[in-house]
Structure formats: structure tokens, C-alpha cells
Image (tube, rainbow, N blue to C red):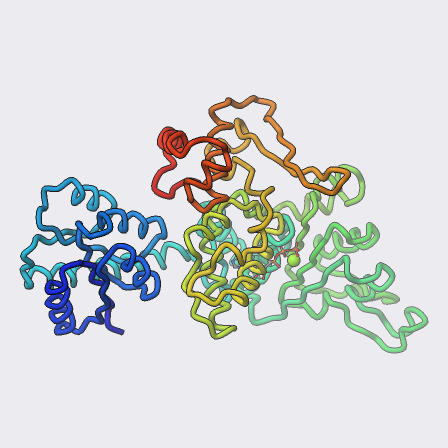
Length: 484
Ligand SMILES: Nc1ncnc2c1ncn2[C@@H]1O[C@H](COP(=O)(O)OP(=O)(O)OP(=O)(O)O)[C@@H](O)[C@H]1O
Ligand SMILES: [Mg+2]
């Protein structure tokens, strides 16, 4: 596809000659003659490059550039100016304009600048795509993980998968990816050609679970009319995934421990010891250590499983993964729903980054799926994110200031009044905070809620727009970086 160039200049003759040249070089061309019109054309046409006049009838091209940066526009911008010494040109370069050209335009220089800028843009996109989705294909399983935590987990998983280990325990909150990691452990191991058998210990009634796991001989109990192999035998040579191991009845815990110790067991009603070679991958979303301490889970089994522990942190503690996962699922559903969604708008990204994800990756995946069904423009907008209308989760300031996570952040839960109205319930951390911090949280929050609209944000806080701007400056919240 040919690159698309947007020419924004109020001189009709110059636009005409620029258009002709660009078309000669096989670019697609769209035009605008003012900032206002430029904004519309830019958002409708999503050009790859903008040739932007500095001085336009309705303002400075720099303002448009700034707006584009706030929207995270991928387009390269080349300024056109009669006087390269004006302050606006410097500002434009600081804001990330690729270069500037001086009127009268030298067309050779123009051609070279355009092709270089587009080349840089292409490379930048490739680098972003690679960095954003440092995902690994583990025997067909795609585990997205850009955060240092996930990277080191995946290194560990690769080592464990290749090892002789016969018992592995994966812990993590619901939706963090325990199933996925269990499957990659199998897929990356030398057992991958053999069976992968998964059982959820809480899903099978206790009285059936033993027969299900260990099988039974004919006549072992009333309904046992024939001999039946259990899941351990079916997983022989491969992997048995015991999900929600914490729910395994105590009696079966000791039987499991025995299998782990000497790789043998008996069917129900059987007299013969059967040998199996099975790798047990157990998973739990409750704290097994506590369960072991309180006697609900056998300590010896806990320690046996804990020889190789894998802990997957909740998504809110590895925020670097949020956008990488979001983009990954967008691609996934693009294929499934035959859509061409390119990503999230800047505001939607901020909202995702600021949200706490109690349901972890599963919740994020569902959120993207829902948004992609509803969204009909090219990027997912905040309105379609399920948590857009709640204000509660956004109020957590550790989100906005990751470096101060637990210590000085004020947080709010919501409290429901008897009349059903929800009000924030503020909590000050025991280590204390400062009024300045409170102010910073509120300013960030107001900007985030109004999607960066300063007049609205100022109104929310009942201060003047100048006062807001002053505070934004003080807290380094300018240029749409409200939540960084
Ligand atoms: N790092 C990841 N990369 C890609 N997809 C992921 C990742 N983590 C989780 N997922 C996806 O998120 C969903 C939930 O993950 P999974 O079922 O593995 O969670 P879980 O920890 O087993 O949850 P539960 O405790 O509720 O069983 C799945 O569709 C899974 O494929
Ligand atoms: Mg699971």
C-alpha cells in the first residue's frame, strides 16, 4: 500500500504543487487548508506523514502537532516554514516533528525528507511491535509477557519444562494464567508427544474423585461393572494437571503424595501396585501455605509440591504487561471477528493502565473481546471498556505513581450508603501522605476522568483553568501525560 500524505497549508498554489510532486512519487495525497480542517482530515484519513505549515489562518501548526502527539498519532510530521528561526519551529522539533523544510520548497530535499521520515516510521512501528509483544511461542502456546516478572517466569518455565521434575506447583490469583503456564510446561517438555490430562479437583464430587483419578477394578463398588483406568494411567508418560489442588480431600492428598514419592498406586479395589511415569503440575489460587498451616492441606504434600514453585503475580503488579496483552488479544479477535481494529486510543490505554484488574488477564481478555464487538471505529475508545463508567478503581493513586506504590498513596474504595448511593471512602496509608500528594492524585484523576479536557477538569475541581495549568506544570502532568 502506498504511504498517505496529508498536506496542510493555506496557500492553494503551494498545496497544488506539493500534491503533484507527491503523486509523481506515488504517494496518496489528502489536503487541508486550516488547523480545523486538518484535524478532521487527519483523524479520518490516518495519514502516514503530514506536511504541516507553521503559520495557518486559524493558529499555529504547532498546536495541531501537539494535539496529534496527545492522541499518540503514528504519523511523521514535517513542518513547512518561511522562517526556520521562529520559535514555533523549535517547539515543533521538540514535540517530535521529524524535520522542517524552508519555503520556497526544494523538491529534491522534499523527496528525500519524505522517504527518510517514512522509513523511520516503518522501523519504529516494527520495533514497537516487537517490544510490545515480547511473547514467546512455547510449543504453540503464546504467553505474552513484557514485564520483568513475566520474562523471568518464562525463563524459569523453560528450564523446569526441560528438567526431570515430577512435581510443580503454580500459584496465582484467578485469571493470572495458571492453566496457560501448565500447558506450556507440558508443550515445552520431552513429554509433549504424550497425554496432557487436566482435572479440576473442585469440579468432581468427592466420592467420585478417587475412582476418577486412580481408576477401579471390576466389582470395586456397586456401580463398578467393569475395570476402569484412572486419569493417572491415562496421563502415563505425560502430564497430569491438577487444578485447584487445595480442594483435594485429605484422604486423596495422601494417596497423591505416595504417587509422587514412588510413582506407584493402586486402582480402587486393586491389589497390585501400578507403576506410572507422570509429571504432576498442580495449581491453586488460594494460599496453600496457609491451608497447610491450618491443617486443611497436608504439610508434607505442600512441601513436596513446593520443591518447584511458580508464582504468577496479579496483573496489577506487572502493569508493563497490560498493553502488550491488550494488543495481543486485539490481534486475536481481529482474526476471529474479521475486524481491523488497530489498537486502543490514548485515553483507553490510560484507562487500562490505571485499572486494577481484579480478574487479571481473564478480565482483560473479556474486556477486549466485548469492546471489539461494540467498537466500529479503528481504535477502541474508552466508552466501550466495561469499567469506564465506574470511578472507583481509577481513584487508586498507586496507579498513577507506580514508584510510590504502597507507602504514600491515598486510596479510595467505594462505600454504599443506605440509600444506595456510592461514595468514595478515603483511606490514608498508615505511613502517612502529604497534602501535595493528595492534590496530585486529584488533579491526575480529574484530567483522566475528563480525558484531558482542562476546562472540564478545572470545573470538576472548582478551580480556574489557570490554577489547573499551574498545578499540571508543578506536577509534570503536561502534554497528555497525566497518568505517567
Ligand atoms: N501471559 C498471557 N499471555 C496470553 N494469554 C494469557 C496470559 N495469561 C493468561 N492468559 C489468558 O487469560 C485467560 C485466563 O488464564 P488462565 O485460564 O490460564 O487463568 P488461571 O490462572 O488458570 O485462572 P483460574 O484460577 O480462574 O483457573 C486464558 O484465556 C489465558 O489464555
Ligand atoms: Mg485455571
